[in-house]
Length: 391
Figure 1 (cartoon, rainbow, N blue to C red):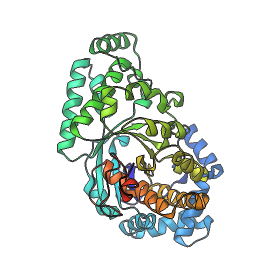
Figure 2: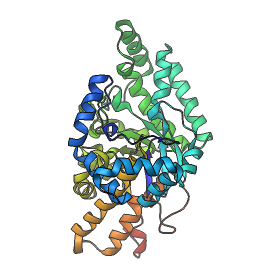
Figure 3: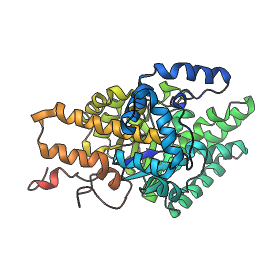
Figure 4: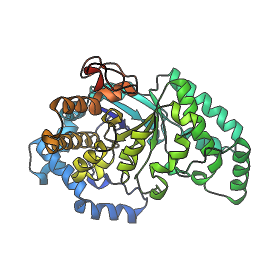
């Protein structure tokens, strides 16, 4: 599979800490104690531990120790074995999660044994400019320059975490004048940086859509749940509907990531009715793994299969990349069995090849295909060209 949403993992050995496998990112001794206490009670953590034990050939109670023994002896070999077992054929990496700029993909490719392509996150640039006291016009110009430079450096797409800032209720009519006034008002009363500049951030979202169209790169948009810093009510993908109806929103590929959980059917609807909207399935397979097959089927029930990609949202632990991927793989087998004879075997085969690899290769313009040359799913999809005429 092409894991189309990942973050950096350690390039050298680090002990496995299952208490860190959580969306709770609060800081302090009390938070550390809470995570340690609750980790054994989390279903996702237990499923990861048991699955890892199976991979290592040991009892679940010995999984952490066996992992550390194997990993410390040969970190590159251990990591490569994880990615080989998950069937990962390449990764699209967002380094901005850790505040790092894009780049360094070669180091992760060398360690994992698979190609790694860079994704450029917009918010680190925007936040830094706002922290420096820049005006709206300067922020827009510098974001333009950043996007152009990242394409020159090989970025295959962009990402925004606007849901973590001022939310996805984007006002498509936000103007530069409104952005300047809003910044001044927020600075006057000391609005926290991450919540400041809504008009500017709305303006930048629509502007970035247009620039992505010009640069021929997709825009990943964080939707649905995330870590404990997000305001979940502000991350429903349906809040984007008005801006998706604009010329900019209709002219570039918009990828609603994380299956927009718990609004996966909202995301599926948008992918089915908006001309360039995709939905990407990641993160919820890590932290809600037991119902992944049901969620994947519900997404397929609404969205065109040619508009679905998958990822792990692996971060911190290489095991998270592996676990997210094998959960997806198992979920697809369950979905395939559930569908039974209601669809053809050919449809199942093409769908599997599409959602696990070919759609991502086409969306991000990546080389290769798991099923040979196929029609561009952005135009008609691989299902229809097999029939005479197509419709």
